[in-house]
Image 1 (tube, rainbow, N blue to C red):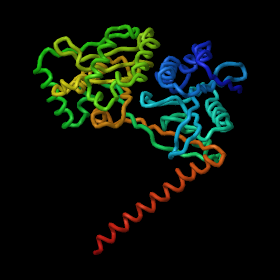
Image 2: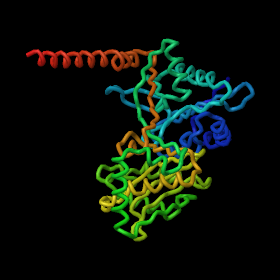
Image 3: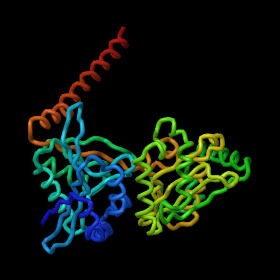
Length: 378
């Protein structure tokens, strides 16, 4: 197998784009956040100050058979400056992964890992937000363990999802009585206010007026107070706009609005890909919080998806928040694999993080347990 490293946007935008998405469609994990369009939008929005380092693997016939969408970056680890290479993912990314052909997938993953481990002047290799059931995670963790590498695994996000494999009434009947009662009260309260409506708008590009509506709602949300609304974060705003322009022409971008008196007060930004819905952003106008606009909108969206029966899954792209866990107890767990270099600094950081700190935590826990036992005998 032959490896080629993509270090410029020009190369990434070239002939690789078409081959990239063709390979993804042959991948077991054919998801929206591994598409070429998503990666380009992500890099253009969040890649500033980092160095592109996409690994492309070609088989003996010269066909693209593997991609690792990675970047080099400077970071800090336990207060120490480090040089790191990692998968391109952050809080906007539901997950991350390698893209590999079904044929010889294990060999391709090992080829990428061998290349990464052979890089010099790097302190840490981070495989970010891997699904713990994914082929990459399972093969990488076994392969690294067998070869005696210094590596550690840390929990990352745990994201609920809803399988759409029944009718709506059957699905809802399996939710807790308490949740159904609370939901019913919210819907009744919203209906009593009158003039509420739901609208779905297809987005072809960022020029659609609906984009200004979601920015206005986000600016009036509770997230504004902590600076996480879209308008307060130029990178986040750029990402959503690029997603509209890159994926909108494919007909997979849409926005659900909850409107009162014809004016939008809540939204959910959707991407629909490979029969899965990804709600990558949702906000509501805080001044209408007494109507529970987020819950009302989400109820209507999920009900619509069940009634239509077109998609197979609603991937919340979120965490195990209570409001999401009320809808589903099915989750996907993600983890970061940290592989440490061979030099003195990464060796020291590995021993600090995965040897000394766990040992000190265990000592502290044992001390607390002993104190509790002592209190019980007094």
